[in-house]
Image 1 (cartoon, rainbow, N blue to C red):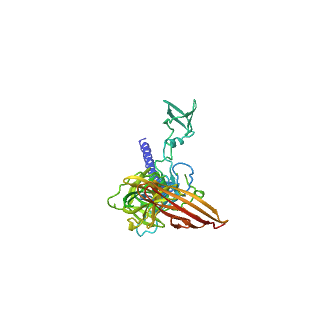
Image 2: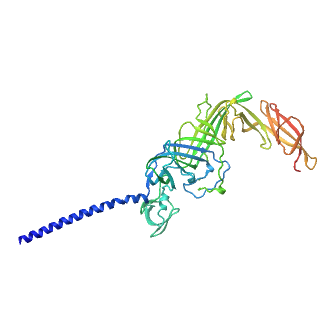
Image 3: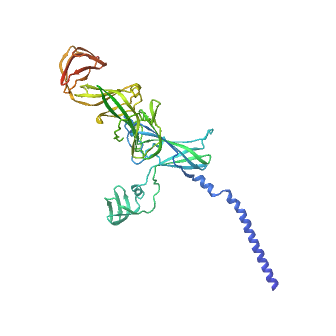
Amino acid sequence: MAVQNQTTLLVLALFVVGAVALLFFAQQSIQPAALVAPLNVVWNFNQPASESAGATSALELTVYNAPSSASYYSYGSGLMEFNPSNGIALVKEQRSAELASGLTHLSVEGVAAHLSPGSVRFSTILPAGTATSDARVLEQDYDYDLVSADKILEKYIDKTITLRSENRTFTGKLLSVSPLILQTSEGVKLFTETPQIETLPELPEGLITKPTLNWLLEVSKPGKHNFELSYLTSGISWKTEYVAYLYPLGTDYILDLNSWVSVTNDAGATFKDASLKLVAGEVNLVQASNYYDYGYGGRAMVAEAMPAAAPAAKQFTEQQLFEYHLYTLSRPTTLKNGETKQIELFSAQGLKAKSELVYESSRSDRVRVNVEFENKKENGLGVPMPAGLVRVYQSKEFVGEDSIEHTADGEKVRLFVGEAFDLSAEREQTDFEQVSRCTTRQSYKIVVRNAKENAADVNVVEHSYGDWQILKESHNHVKDSSDTFAFTLHIPANGEETLTYTLEQRYRYC
């Protein structure tokens, strides 16, 4: 009996040892198979790794004048609106990101809200001697659905939510956001005041806090990649404004001129420590009739610049760009979203200027006052002057303003300041004769009166068309162009002067 029990125990021990051995060898045979195809390899293939670009390391902003004749339409609303009618800018940003090899998602936050998605350009910054890029863009998404109370509620249309209004809570199915309508157990509730959101069924997806570009990249070399992002955006414009101070010098003037640029940023992004460039000239942009925009004024600058005692150091350097002029600020500057920044473009002192009294009946029935000066180096200026508004002061008092077109070096600047108070003019046709079917003779009398205590010279400008000649005149005329001639009248103090002339006119296609 004892021998039989020992035999039974031996058999059980051998069975246990064999079972343990079988489990050990089974485990060893399964392990290599698990290492052949680990799950993370399959995951990376189907779901590209997601990365976020770092902060901007270098930023360049080139701003263009708003087109003067462009007429654009906006399609839709929201943030993705590109409409160049209020100015455009080229944005260049340098950033870096750690990228995995293969297919990788890269997100770039904080781009302008009014960018043109079709203008976006991605380019890697390659080390010296490298010819091939290690990354290229396969797909691009522009996400602009920024988080807001209305945007959150729009995610819950046809879902049950709880709102609080009028010291009560209302639970029901959301039917509309604008206006806010809730289907409750008591009936349809229309909210006339903005309610407080009490509970939502879940956190909505697809909302972001900053406009974001999302790229699907194909990366051949993992690691840190430096790249440049560039795009066009609307909502940024610039304009030039001038402040001119007149100092009487005998019958003429000495003029001090300060030029300011106003840059308005409504692009939906802040550009910090940007290298600022301004392009003077009108670039061509495709009109709305054959260009589809996806939906988007300058602000007047109020500034009184006092004349400087000595020329200040130039902040902008100017150079030729294609058929335009490029002005580059010598230091970085920050343009906040919703901000208008003013920067001095240039200043000049001691320019020779003169005033001119002009009576031109086709423009006004009053005597106009003009101020003229030459944009020449010999006159203390001689720089390209972008188009803009010129405000004129004398004895620190405002005396008028006018706008100028782009004015090249060597051209004359003529400003219409206002109308003379003490000078008046009256024009009358005194005779008309039909000489032949194609020829007429006309006589005119122009009387200019001066109520001032000193004499004044008035330039009387007249116009005629076709083939014409002056047969009689009380004062000698000067022919300025094919259809313009002028007389200079010396009006004594508290006196008047009368101009008469007879004109024969023949129509060319009669």
